[in-house]
Image 1 (tube, rainbow, N blue to C red):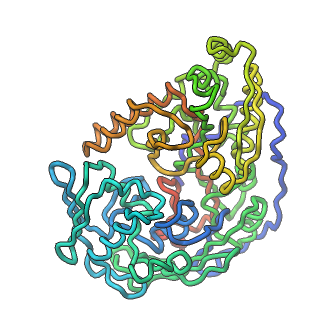
Image 2 (tube, rainbow, N blue to C red; image 1 turned 30 degrees about the vertical axis):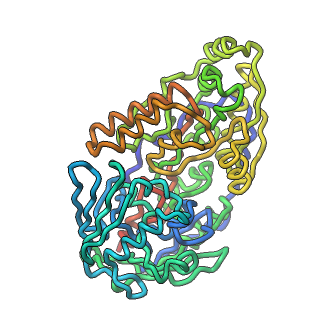
Image 3 (cartoon, one colour; image 1 turned 180 degrees about the horizontal axis):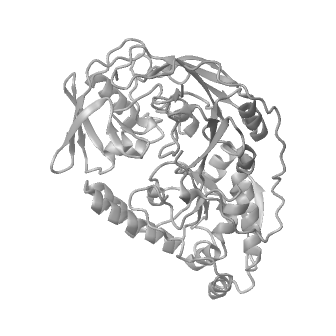
Length: 508
């Protein structure tokens, strides 16, 4: 197993008295093996509210359906690279404004309807239309028109170049949908993928079965059936794994329990990387956070190693900007406004707060957010800053108060979208960060299709955020996987939130 060194637990002690409730007990230490070598049961902490990734944003939707039920023109592989899928090839015009896709032939949806250019046109028009509720609708805004010269050719005419278009087309929100079944995909999804939807027992599980008519004969799927079981409680997750009730928890929810599997003869622990960037966002449009010096001082009050140790049992990688080490063009900027309490105090005094200040953080109920808030509270106290913690129910209350109304001082959330540094250029967005120079960098990224130039520009964008500190950049959460040692083919890393079953099989 490739257990990445970047995710080694931080060994440094906390030095802070924190009651994080790490005491837990395990139950049901059974040794049952998989009932069938052609079936698998995967555990998930969160049950999706629907099964159509083209109409809603929660990552749990794609973790059940993306690449299992639904496919796109392109796809993202386990290394995070763009690969052909329902489009077997494409050509880009010299001005970067015309994309001509050659579509794969002989592909049918699970209801028997053929996939062709008319379906591609329908899907993209639906995603970019005035009434679209697609969670990534903004990424389709650059498309001016969609043409279908013949059944196997799809042409996208753009208003301006979009250097990341092929990448965006591989996301769950860009999945191809069949027109007649699209309206019902939320409850009975129909795609072109290697698995068909069978049933959904709300509150319990989703069942899938192998698609015997799957187009990709060069990579036959070995599983006949797959189930996603929803278990929210961490102790129940551990008990289900120990008892063999689930074969895998690709995203195990309790880092403090990982050690309990260390000597297990049946279960393997696999630590990989994700795109989950934990940041403490500040309202840049509200005092005192409209003063860059205050934001910089708070950043210098944060010892990221202490945060990782206390919030996620030492699992995680500190970050200095809104970017992960597995993203292209990554720069390690953790040294920008590094931990230094004396400098932090001096900068606060320079900003007009020699006696500190008081504010409130709106923290969702999730364990990582609550724990991180407690640690930040203790760290800020060391520079004379009082931070009150207000637990804010996620998603409804947090979305209403923070994301939509921007009614907050500070908040904390793990941003899951890959390469989403552009959120700091969106207007409106909850940070209220306004920087025309930053926005120009993002425009230049999209105006070029040269990877080297894009990487350089991404580096400039990261550096600008590290200096301006619109949010406190803390750490990337790891992918904590626990699964049967005989189960092979699960993704160890997560370049995009998913549970891809295509290569999953049992070792003989």
